[in-house]
Image (cartoon, rainbow, N blue to C red):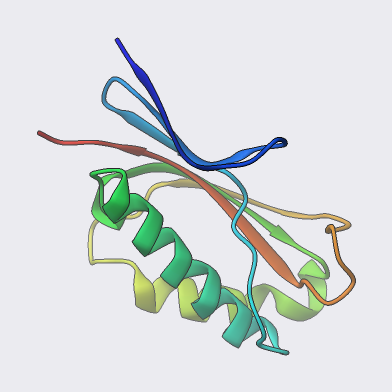
Length: 117
């Protein structure tokens, strides 16, 4: 089997596929200031990377969501997440509070998905 890396640099790859699995690195937002907007930006990045790797959000197996402040931001993030998911296609999921790489980042999401042929 071949390992394929997308959007790689010296530290990480945006996505790595191996066999029928796709692993996304933590996706962070661009310019949005609030957690709802940041979540929408992150989910758009996930959509694009999964498509490029030959997968789709409906093939997600697992997601880990990192929130800078779970008490303040969980409900708003979860509202955007729930709207984005296709009915009946929710992956396993973990949500945790974490100190993120930059002060303005409120949410980061990493995903494992299947590639269906």
